[in-house]
Structure formats: structure tokens, C-alpha cells
Image 1: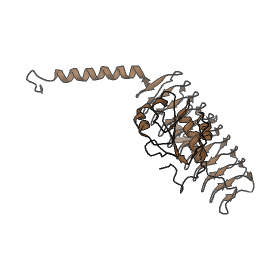
Image 2: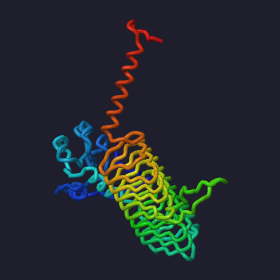
Image 3: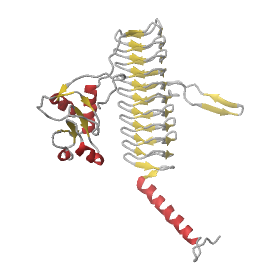
Length: 349
């Protein structure tokens, strides 16, 4: 069965295999038409599938797909009657082919009658403004942008070209580059968590910075990015932020970082380029995380991390050190257990 329920996803095609191969980064001069994409297990003779993980090689050998995008290493395992589209990066090839058959929904330029748009806002004629959206004074919405139902674009906010703001998201005190995607329910630019402690209680510190989302950033559903206190919160170009992520004020993320669901980055932490942060990791404030570091799931990071380091655990430790520590603790636990057992096998207690 082909992927992409037509109730939810637009469809295109059919396409000749030669064009599909071009999108996959492979070569083929076969003109046979293909109608869609599907998993290895369900794909039929007129559908394209892919494999990049050798663990599923058995499914590859049994597939009925008409063509499969694979690496050169797995190409010999493609069954007879199935065309191997050999790609240097099968996963990226699959992404492009899937987008070929299922393009993004077409934009419907115009402002819905129920939207509330300030006379002082500047909106390009090519934009789509959904029902009940709010566009406040001095906001600038660039060409090709799509603002979802119920979304709020605050006063003075600037959106570059082809941005997408999901339903019920809010963007305030922010400047967005081109092709930024803010998923439904996300909150960008709200006041950060900043206060002074006095003898009479807490005193809120004004948060006077903004949020900058550079080109091609994606912010997942219900994630939050606080505006800066005295400097801007900056998310570097190409960075992908998953759902339910919290990023505090003055944080600076580098280019092409990945921050996975339920992670939190406290204020003023600086993260280098191409850093990967696993699910539910927590980073305290004012840290420096070096470029290409990898932080494991549920990691508690309380000190700086060197460039290229892999850390896990809480408190975070380099991977080898962490597992050596775990091994030592296990040996100690076994010795204690053995020491509490008498010669007759019964516990001394």
C-alpha cells in the first residue's frame, strides 16, 4: 500500500524511473512509470522503497517493490525483478523522492476574513493568513509565508521568505530568516525566566533582548524559546528543534544543531555548530558546548563540554568513563551481595 493517505497528503505523479533516480542521487535510463512510495514490506511493482539500515536486509530480500534506493553495499541483496537505485546517501535520496510524490500543500494567498490584521502590518500579497490569526502593528511578513489558524505574530516581528507558522503558535520579539518553520503551539519570544531575589521577595528583571531564528530553522510543536534578557537568543541556520523543548534566554545555538524532545537548555549557554542533544537532556546555564559534541538522552550537563566529545549520564561524563564507572559499581554490588551470603547459601541476616 502506498504511503500518504490522500485525505491528508497531496499526491503527484506518476513519474518515470529515470526522474526518480535523479532525485535519489542515482542513475537509471528506465522510463517505466512509478505511482508512489511505500515501505519494503508492502511496496508493489510500481512503487519505490528504500533501505539504509543493514538490520532490515531480510525485508529487502523479500520485497516486491519495483525499485529500492540502497547503498552500494546493500545493492547485491536487492531481489531479482527489483531495480536497485544506488545512492551515496539512501536516506536523503528517499527524502527527495518522497517529496517528489508528496509535495508540500499548495499555498492559498490571501487573508482570511476572520483574521485580525493591523493596518500598520506589512504583508506580501503572496502570503496566506489563516482564520483567526492575529498580525500586530509593524509586523513584516515576507513573500510566500503561511500563517496558520489562530497564530499570533506580535508587534514588530519580521518574517523572511517562505516561513510557516503553525496553528496556535505565537511569535513575538523575534526576527526570522527564510524558510523557518514554527510548528503548531510553539512559543517564540516570550519573557525569559529572570528575576532578582530580594529580602521582600522576587523582583522581575526586564527581558530586553529578542529571538533570532536564522535561515532554515525548524521549531517543533509546543516548544518554547525565550527572548534574551540583555542579549539576543539566537538559533543558528539549519538547526532542528524537536517538540516540547525549552530554550532559555540568551542561549546561542550554532548551525545545524539537533535538540531532541523534552530537552532543556538554561540561560546564556552557548552551543557550537553541529551539536546533537538527546531526548530529556538538561543543560544548566552559562555553559560552553563545543562544536560537534554529542549529549546523550537524559544527560545532566553541569559543566562545559569539549568539541567533539560524547557525554552521557547525570552528571554528564565522557562515554568511556561513564561505562567504566558503571562497571565498577556493578562489581562492587556483586561482591557485597556475595559477601552477605553464608556458606550454606542463606543470607547472613
